[in-house]
Length: 71
Image 1 (cartoon, rainbow, N blue to C red):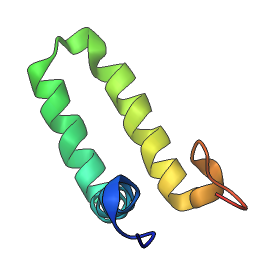
Image 2: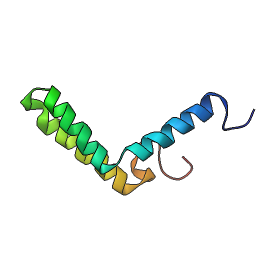
Image 3: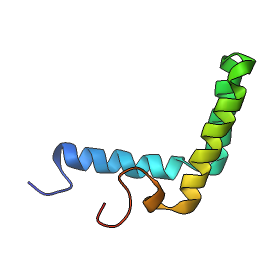
């Protein structure tokens, strides 16, 4: 069985799709939706999480958990 088949291949495809969708614009859209659906006292936490997600996008794979060389 090749490396791109089975559950490992499915996981790799899902990971790749997530990377494509995790743009700063999409992170902002998601944060706004979360802020609409939650009480106002949560907004600061949502903004902080969105900022961290965008920072990790800018920093590249080494900034992501499990990222970096050999990941």
